[in-house]
Length: 79
Image (cartoon, rainbow, N blue to C red; front, top):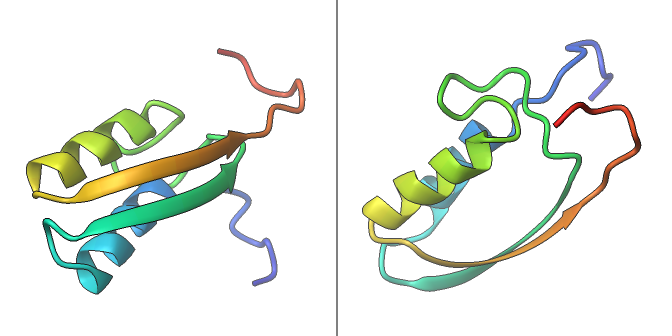
């Protein structure tokens, strides 16, 4: 990783990884440290609101996830 993308592809990647690794109905725990901003995922997963779409998509697919999220805000974001 070299940072050349100048952005983050996060919520869609997490969804893809969970669906490709785990079976629906299997309880899993996800630990996430993030600034919440996703600039490169497709809508509706883009932006800080992409977390809501991610949870909805996975819940509807039958995944049981306990989220442990640490949100780092450095004063650079506008909410």
